[in-house]
Image 1 (cartoon, one colour):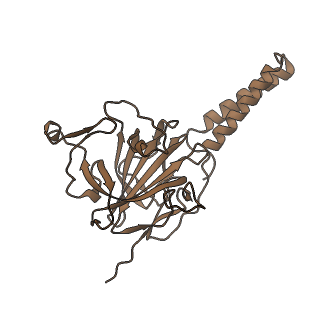
Image 2 (cartoon, helix red, strand yellow):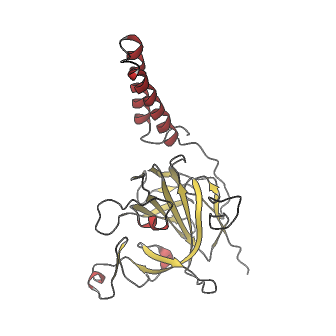
Image 3 (cartoon, helix red, strand yellow):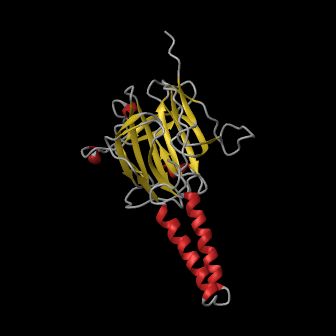
Amino acid sequence: MGGLARGGHAPVLITFMMGTSAIIIGVTIDSLNGLMHLFGILCWMTSAFFANFWRDPDRKIPTDESILVSPADGHVMFVRRERATGRRPNKEEFESELLESDKLSGPWYPETISEPLSFATEQRFESVPEGEESPTDVYRIAIFMSPLDVHVNRSPCAAIIERMEHRTGQGRRRGPFLPAMKKESEHNERVRTVFLCEDELRIEVCQISGALARTIVPWTAVGDQLRRGQRYGMIRLGSRVDIRAPAELFSPVVESAESGNPKLPKGQFVQAGSSILFKKKQVIS
């Protein structure tokens, strides 16, 4: 049902009532040389901003079983084919001489997990040079959400939530909070969710905080079953969402800001739950 997202009613109503009360006091008691009227108008403007930010419109969800829909509203920053080059270490590997540490993203073990497409833990990815493709590659689509976009996130497919992890930068309880349009923002404070789809394939979605957005709010938990396009959480204020899907099975069908299309300098605009990001490749027998 459209309207306001969870948590949005209180800030909208409180600021609206504060503005209304200030205007009434200014008219009936004392305007304090117009300051009460100014304060009331500012409260109303703040209430309108909150209403716009927390809006949660209904969406028409595509029924095609061979697609993945966008988990977020915003412009497509980039579309890249990637491969895993490392993973988060386990307890024993923390003592290994092979352990690598990055100032921003923390410790990495420079070996991939046995099945990279299981997304069993957070992995380190790099772009795949043309001609060096492999069956375990993924396509990543990054979506930038401005403060004016709808910030409710939706499931890209009918799935069960298999994993949900909260991650921060090295040695941090919160953050970092780099601007979401920067490449380095992928290591901002984030929530990594793995969706186990009905055909046993896995899709990874990362909700990434930005310079303004510092609160990621999951509405679901591990084990919950979702429909395609079902709401599962939101990020408050400007932010970013990345989605990874197996490159052997899916082809991206959107244009990014890196595509060079002069008509889409910011990349194609997509909407959560209704815009198609990936289509399954046809299998030739």
